[in-house]
Length: 243
Image (cartoon, rainbow, N blue to C red):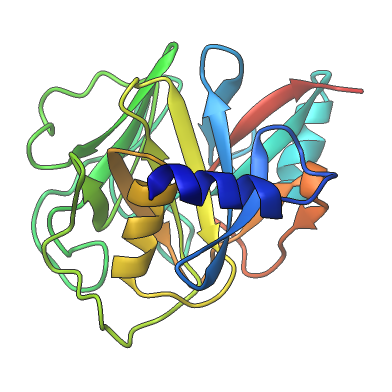
């Protein structure tokens, strides 16, 4: 079934798509997703500009990169944040911890344990349980969010297939090789169970993390996709040479 789903996704993808991204339908809903090979592309996180002001938008980040002869490749909002756009949980940028990890249960999606951390290292990545790995993280870039969607191939135990809580959602998954990162967003409202199955059964990620819902946005110039809306906190994306 997974191979058939991947074939259908390829057939339905627009002919003008960027090489690493595609649009697909899975179990009755539309999704857009991008696969980033960390051995071939540079992926990282951003929060503030040099003056300490949150970028907040893909345009401002792209303008910032252009000052050093680079441009934004693909990008997505990268986790929950407070009204001042400070990260709710762990946030690491250039190996510097800017916000501490949070391991206690709490209200809302972030506190639906187990939640998790996306950890980017040189040439590799991992999505991991925040509680199990709180003292062992060694990440060049990291963002914490919740809940985990897929945990070693299993869905989060609190997800219900018939849940009527449906929203636009975005998340990130890592394939078993630790080298390929998948950024995915639902193009219509779905529940957590549906979204997690998308990451596991279509995108092929053994571990995946929910990033957000209300502010979910994707930037993929190759698909003519540039979502607007509320200002963002952390942003995840790839860096390309200008031109």
